[in-house]
Image 1 (cartoon, rainbow, N blue to C red):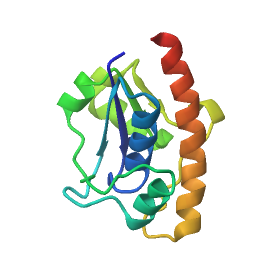
Image 2 (cartoon, rainbow, N blue to C red; image 1 turned 30 degrees about the vertical axis):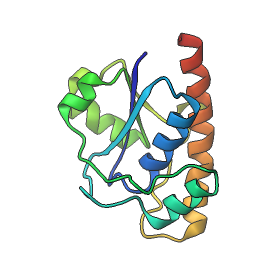
Image 3 (cartoon, rainbow, N blue to C red; image 1 turned 60 degrees about the vertical axis):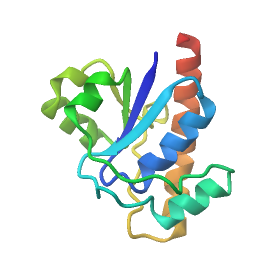
Length: 144
C-alpha cells in the first residue's frame, strides 16, 4: 500500500483531521484528503486546526480541494465519513469498488459533520475519527 485518500463533504473539518492523524501514524504512506463538494481553497476550520495543534499536528497549510476521478484511481485506500458518501462515490466512481470504506467501519459508526457547530461537535467527531484512524492504522500496518 502506498496511498490513502480521506474524503468528506467540504474538506475543511473532518477529512483534514483524519489526514493529519493518518499521516502522522503512517509516515511512509502518502495521505491526502479531498471533498465531495469541497470549499476549494479554504483552510481547515478553526476548531479542526486548534484540536490538531493540541496534539502537535499542524494543519495550518491545509487548503480544501475537490475530489476527482484521478485521485480515486491513484489511491490504494479511500476512507469516507459516512455511508451516504460511500454510496455516492461507488455510484459516481465505480473504480472505487474494493478500496472504498467508511473511516468508522470498525466501530460501525458514521463520523457526524461538525461544520458550523461549536467545539463540542468537533470533539465528538474527532473521538470517532481517532477510533477509526487507530483501527485503520492497525490494519494497514498488518498489510505492510
